[in-house]
Length: 81
Image (cartoon, rainbow, N blue to C red; front, top):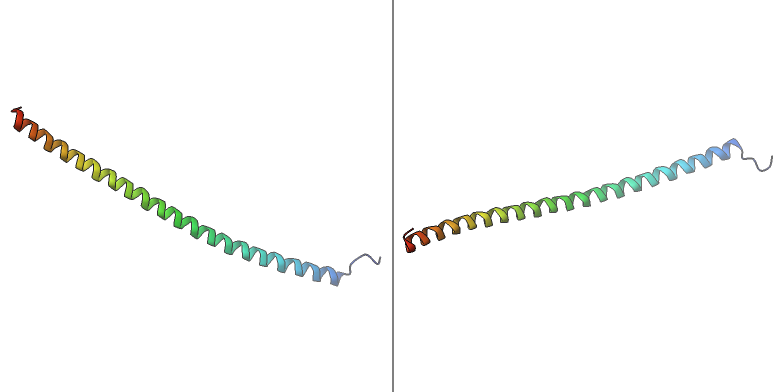
């Protein structure tokens, strides 16, 4: 019976365990919030980068179309097409 813990000792140990669990969960939540903020920042950067690339492609396509039209007019003018 000497190895058995008293009810008071068990309650104290359980209380310590609960406090440790709460502190650990709090740290995990803080790390999770930090990680989520970093992921959101990366996603925002990625969306911005994709938007810039799409805009540049549209500008390039527009410029290409304009140049094609100019070349067609010049060819028609020079060769009487």
